[in-house]
Image (cartoon, rainbow, N blue to C red; front, top):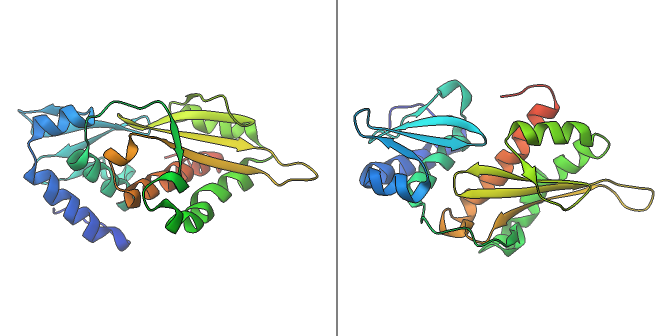
Length: 207
């Protein structure tokens, strides 16, 4: 993979790109819900309501200015590992994912608490941010949405506003099929990227 990746994601992206290169592109496209152009040797994949392109077999992701190291790692592993299994229609908290309890503290700190803090008194902006990501109503919390992070991985996100007795809370949940598509480590990244994209919209720095 020739595309430069900064920070701690370089080795992860390298490994994921190697898995993509070793895969059969039409099968990967079918299992992941992406589209593969055999003439251009290019996957088109929707990620948080935007289209991205992954070159085969190099694993080059574009547009490069709109995707960071975590996004690249998620997209490449998703293409390489997607099971193609249908949604199961029930939600799992991060704690319920394989190995989730061991990483819940950092996940709550990095993904969940920032949402509760930022949108506690600003549900209007939370709703706008969620809709920008293609959200559909979830029906939980004071405001809750289903956001299609990847073609076959929806995420649920909800905010409960605080009051005089209890602080604001938030949650991010996964369809029960998600662990068949990505490892818990990568689902961890996916939840954090959802949180960051909502917060970036809320701070006026839309991506």
